[in-house]
Amino acid sequence: MRIDPDQLPAPRSRRDPDHAHSTGLVAAGLRHAYGPLTVLDLDTFTIAPGDRHAVIGPNGAGKSTLLNVLAGTIRAQTGQLTYNGHTVTRWRPAWRARAGIGRTFQHPAVWPDLTCLDCVRVGGWHHRRNPDHTPIQVLNLVGLADQADQPASTLSHGHRRMLDLAVAIAGQPRILLLDEPAAGLTDTDTGRLLDILHGLPSWMAVVIIEHHMDVVAAFADWITVLHQGRRHTDGPAHLVRADPAVAALYLGTGGGDAAHP
Amino acid sequence: MRAFTQAVAVARLRSLPMVAPLVVAALAIIVVAVAADPYLHTTVARMLPFALLAVSVAVVTGHAGLPTLGQVAPYAAGAYLTARLALTGIDLAIVHLLCAAVVGAVVAGLAGAVLVRHRGTVFLMLSLAVAELTAITAGQWRAVSGGTDGLAGIPAPRLLPGLPPLLGDRTVLLYAATITIAATAVAVWLLRGDRRMLLTATRANEDRARASGHPVNAHLWMVHCAAGAMAGIAGTLLIHTHRWITPADVGFGTAALVLLAAVIGGARSLGGAAVGAVIVLGVRDVVAVEVPGHAPLLVGALFVIGVYALPGGLTALPARLRRRHRRHAGPHAAAPPTAATSVRSTS
Picture 1 (tube, rainbow over the protein chains, first blue to last red):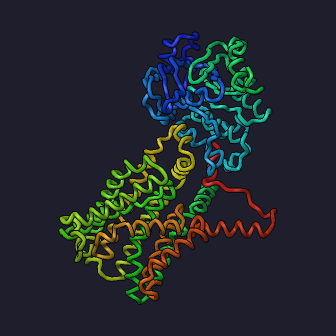
Picture 2 (picture 1 turned 30 degrees about the horizontal axis):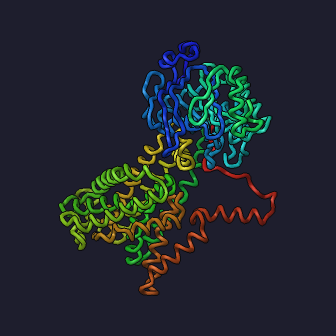
Picture 3 (picture 1 turned 45 degrees about the horizontal axis):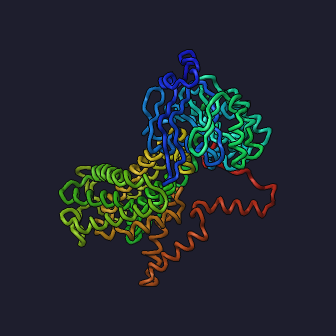
């Protein structure tokens, strides 16, 4: 379904879950554990249209688990998720994707036996009669138009990551969840990634999980810091990046330059 | 007008790989039919239900990516339903085929509701359980199946009311071949284009498919049901060509052989699976006549040779030979890699 930006409300004021409740995604009381190990324990997490939200934290902080819970890949053991006014806690990932929650994967997930163009066609299957962009336009957006008829299995790691992103974009999500999209990319590819992300529609909310703070700094206007599954810090990007406690968190857990805020 | 003519020509060229094997199969059947050997007619006719069952297994195993032993359940349902209809006086072949297709789809749908939630070894073991339950049910449900003695003396079907029953060896061969080739053609047609692309995506990366809004299990369940309908039709052909049935015809042995046939022929090629079925039965029932008592050994050897010498099955052999030829011809002859689906449109 094509979204008319005029019909969407302005981005919410921060810390206002009630506003996001009617337009975006609100997670409340999310908890997930593997045996005795609690990997996610969040009171609230909200996403509203137009958000550029980064989730950072050291390895094992629960970032990917949070993304998997939001996308439906993992069902949280407790808590509730509402999206666009509907309770989607028990919705399966395919239904969430159809409703507008798209995602990429930590390890680029493409279909190796299909051509790049067909990968994008499958990604945008449910919008094929009324697409915002044709598959070749989406491939052009991520710089893969020249490889349209090449099998995805022949792509380099960086190109696979771009194709994964293209497949997600082809699904015309309202909320796009990106799991470490810059991991393994060259500086050139990272620059292209940022160009792509900056070119996304303003109504589309983007949640990015990333260790590269340069990417986070260039893209996000709000940062949530997770530590051991819990919210450590939450706030505007420039304040969080300047927070000594966040720097100490990374340095104290062995974060390198790439992860230094 | 010229553009239209060109488009038709391109469409014909694209459909050639799908149509050619079916034409070859039809020609082979005609060659067998014109031979003056009733034994050959009967032997080939009795292979055809098994070949169609192998096609249904190839749909589930090769296209849905679920190696299955459970297709004997809809096969048995179709066969016993056909036998019971014929024994109660309903002898129209089309009624048998339609009823068997429906009951095959229903049985496959019921089994699939559990099976398609699982993958890999768990799926294979559950499908083995389905095969075993099928054989046990066929042996125990005497009122329907006649118990371990089975059902015999089943009347031959009629094509239309008023026509004589299909009794002649050549007639039965041509009838069974027509149904087998038609059902395979329908399956090939259904599994082309976008459906093939979606199944390839589902098979290759389920998480990505789900994240793109594709309900993977629902897709697999529908494929399982459609393959069940085909297996039900194969069960009808079993009755129409053999005119008797015992639980052994729908037991684990059949389930294993038909999976073997699909593997040897090439599970992603429906025609290849049918050819694999003919090869397996040829080895078991024709070649093994020369070495009595050693049929299982020959079939086992065939399986080992098939797996080690023919990875991807018989139908993958030409592509492998082409690759080998290019390697020997030098690096400049190497062609770019190909994908499972081709670009059909750039818009």
